[in-house]
Length: 182
DNA sequence: GCAGTGATCATA
DNA sequence: ATGATCACTGCC
Image 1: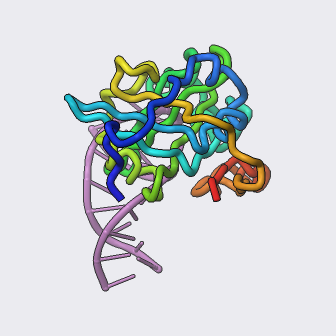
Image 2: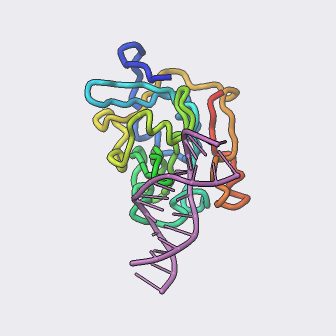
């Protein structure tokens, strides 16, 4: 399904930096049901976040930051509310938003919006690439989040292990840090 | 099931 | 410089 044009939907409040300056799991859960806004030229699109994954700090063996501070992961060690965008398998862009305090090195992966399933497809549908890396989630960037209203009831949120993180070992691959809007 | 695809990082 | 790995997707 194509994202709706902004003209046809109600506008919400821009999520502030403080929203992201919390533990990754809280942010991942909190982002479900929020609007992911994308502005390119004169076109503004709005998509509802339906699936996320939390990647905690360097102690989380599934997190890129567990490998230490590198050129790629540098943004994870920075302030909350910035995007961490990287390419995987030479093909797909992954969209994350950094969470927690500086040096927490945590982030949330956007895995699904509306009827778009899979993080690579999310980025493709929103025309997201490296140019968004290390940019702030504010309207001026052209990519940001908005709160549309009341928070979701817990029963609509399903928690499961994260996808594709077997390399993290039995303990961290089993942690229920994936959040899906039912 | 598995090929495609290339950046990234450790090793040298 | 070289090689392994990869928070995936699409087609068999």
